[in-house]
Image (tube, rainbow, N blue to C red; front, side):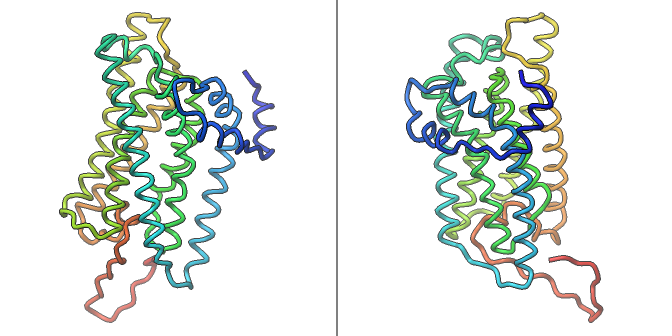
Length: 309
């Protein structure tokens, strides 16, 4: 285990082994997926994840500032392609994860499924787990579309991207059994979310409750995670299951992360759907292809101070 000084030293030096990443993503599929190699790559690139998060925040806010006096880009076609790509990848990951999840639990029982990782990180399923981890880096591109199209950029959006990316890069090499639950829930939610994005981009008619349902699905994801993670921790503590693939540090950080997300999404849901005037701040209106909603004009000619774009 590397010391804090070694980690800080790596944090000050840029290292991104894109060649190994490319080989793992392009040639790693199949029953012989090299988990040890992917685990080492992920562990070695935790400093990169933190560096990339800082760069990501600096870039998106710099672009947002630069776009203040410029017309918004349409980017309708590339956005549609991007959303479709992520939707298909997410659907495929969700299918693989759910299939493994059900097979493992029905074969070995609920207790065994919660306690042991089994082959979740290995073979063909292990390949898609690594794709899931790598996708958190590429999903940051979502924000470029938002700022270039001058859509609302809310704290929840970019905070969620950087925290999730750093967390999965850190938790993946440790292979805790809880990864199975978190990855399954997230893949299902993202398959619906990016499908919704794509359909909105191509102007496919959707019911009014669709956007609200996507938000509720995200909230359900965090509630489910906060149910299963503590349940697993209680079982480990009470029955002293020392052989479980359980890591207390991964557990506590996972709980903190999911609690933070749950609070932010509940706050967002209240602001976006309980108050009609906040339509322009809806998270799921930022990555669709529809024109920006016009603001309601004031009835009296009194300037409104402090209102931001």
